[in-house]
Amino acid sequence: MQEDEGIKYDLWRDHVHLSLTRPVFFIGFMGAGKTSIARFLARKCGISSVDMDTYIERREHKRISDIFADVGEEGFRRIETDVLRELALIDEPQLISCGGGVVASKENRTILTDNGFVVFLWVDVDEASRRISDTSSRPLFRDLNEARKLCEERIPLYKSVADIVVDTTGRNVPGIAFDIHRMLEGRGVLCRQQK
Ligand code: S3P
Image (cartoon, rainbow, N blue to C red; front, side):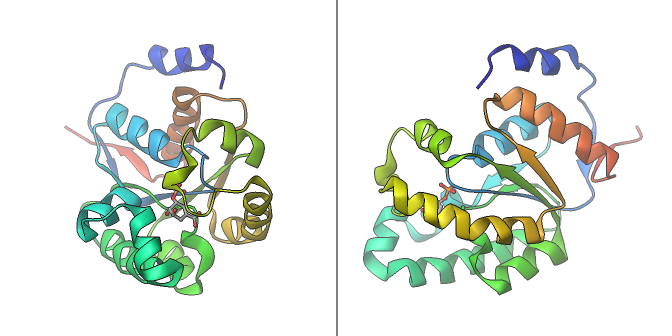
């Protein structure tokens, strides 16, 4: 990712008193930067963010890889749907970074589109694999060719629910967050509060 891109964000100073009109879901393949971008943007805007995988690990008292080992992908997907529904319905809207497979079920896709604004972070699988230092925590990213196939299968699903698509290839977190911030304001999802 380009280092100097973040300068745009440093030039932008008026970052207080912002709120969301609805939840914003960050979706995309593993390594797209969903968690880092949501967290960075949340900090800059003074709003909350939650990472679904972290939430699941705390709720289940287990790491994602252990959930896959114990109850399989199917069991993990059931937990993921419960958690998605729970987070989508929280009163105060927040930035929600979803697991890469959240779009696999129709039920989840409906929860996303019915309840929030969806940001699809696009990443090339080769770049994603360079960004992920430890694939042991991602049971579905252990083989590059398998990951490539999975990503290709999912692209139409990501696109089918996305309100905006952002290409993250070769870019850094502050630069991407800055652009998303502008788009969210433009769409009336992120608002300046009257004081
Ligand atoms: C998955 C992505 C992971 C995690 C689980 C399954 C997937 O989340 O939910 O390993 O099916 O793509 P990240 O996209 O945050 O790595």
